[in-house]
Picture 1 (cartoon, rainbow, N blue to C red):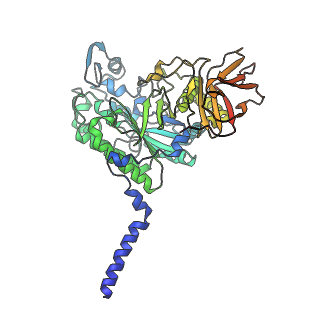
Picture 2 (picture 1 turned 135 degrees about the vertical axis):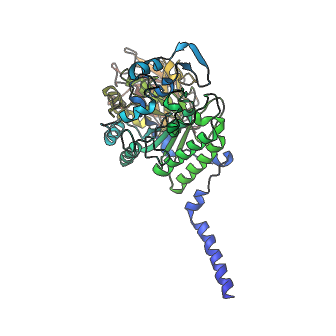
Amino acid sequence: MMRKLHILKAIVLVGLLFVQNPAQAQARKYKPTWESLLQYKTPEWFHDAKFGIFIHWGPYVVPDYLGPFYGYHMYRENIVDIKGNPNPDRKNDVFQHHIEAYGGTEKFGYKDFIPQFTGGNFDARQWMALFEEAGARYVVPVAEHCDGFAMYASTKTKWNAANMGPKKDIVGALFEAGRKAGMKMGMSSHYAYGWYWWGYRQGTDTTDPRYEDFYGKPHKITDPHSAEHVDNVYDRTMDMIKLYQPDLLWFDLGFSNPEYEEMRKKLLANYYNQAAKSKQGVVLNYKNISYKPIPDGAAVLDIESGKLDRIRELPWQTDMSPGGWMWSYTSKWTTKPAKGLINDLIDIVSKNGNLLLNVAPDVHGNISADQQANLREIGQWLKVNGEAIYGTRPFAVFGQGPTNAHMVLHGNLKDTGFTAEDFRYTQKGPTVYAFMLQWEQGRGTIKLKALGSDQHIINDKIKAVTILGYGQPLTWTQEKDGLVIQLPAEHPAKNAITFKVELEEAPAGIF
């Protein structure tokens, strides 16, 4: 009888362990099915942050030519797209440049740039101090670009920054500095897209078996991604998750291919379960292509160099480079003015998005003076206007005016800027913020059409209207078809102006 009681007691204790251990219960929350993964909710920190920094830095900065795509083009005599379509009439200028500068790929391969990538001036704390000054709330260094060189202390490949090149765990140093500064920290993986990268030109190191662990096994650009490559992407990403517990994982286009369908579900489940175990709110960014690689809501959509033309109910993100087509630093780098970047941020936030703005250090680890100046100008604007950006949600309409985004990949490169008739809105509780994106000298009044008394958008009286950072009172009138505001005689801010419209109660119907 006593033996039976002991057995029963043991069974009860085991059962209690499963019931009372929330970490174990959370760890079993997600299964690798879309039905299960649709339980995911975007964490509030991401929804509130609005502004992050992307960092493109790797061996591709050494040749000071083109940027991250140098490795793709240096082995191809003619331009070839990723569908395998060659252009025999268009010579590849990168291929020619590599002959002139390095004697050609038969003598000098991509791997030979790595010893020259030492980054002697890299200082994670200095970078992070600059990003703080810019007003960023999260930072995402490129962990491994398409070249497959890991910028972290990988346990899956010897080709990493801790072993070669800088001989430092670059990502680890940034994570340490960033988390001390209170930043959320992420990592980007472009390695799946690296399947298309090398061209495998005979007589070069890309077809030498000694370097297969770096370049991969030779294959045609049109071949489906091999099971081995898919497994490598998975193993490397799980290595990143286990080593650094990133708050955000960002994936390039290759990850969205059909070959990764089962791997995507498995990876998402493991990432979300590990985060739940440590009560960490995490984000996984993916790119949408001709079909949805991940159902809406199971992760966070990212639009490369583009913007939406409407409010999206689910949070989203765009990554954008102030260098235009350039994502890593070269001597030909030109930085887009801060005014345009601020307006991009406002437009994105008004539609429920976040901006991940690229920074491009040079080969030594220096961030150029023009990039630093721009980041500081953005930060100065956010010090005054940040309450209208951070922690806000979309208003009933994103804005008014003739200018809107081109909903295509790299659509922002087609942007021509905003006009004096373009306005954007955000909302926080009983306050609506209206942004005037372009100042027009001598203009007497503006009309915010969404804030009229007969527009059925706001349901309560307006208490006050002010301009953030401007200490003078404003004259305003709420008419049936809009809120009319008398403008100051002179531009009251360097960049976009933010009108703070305070209501007696919060507007209804805002998600």
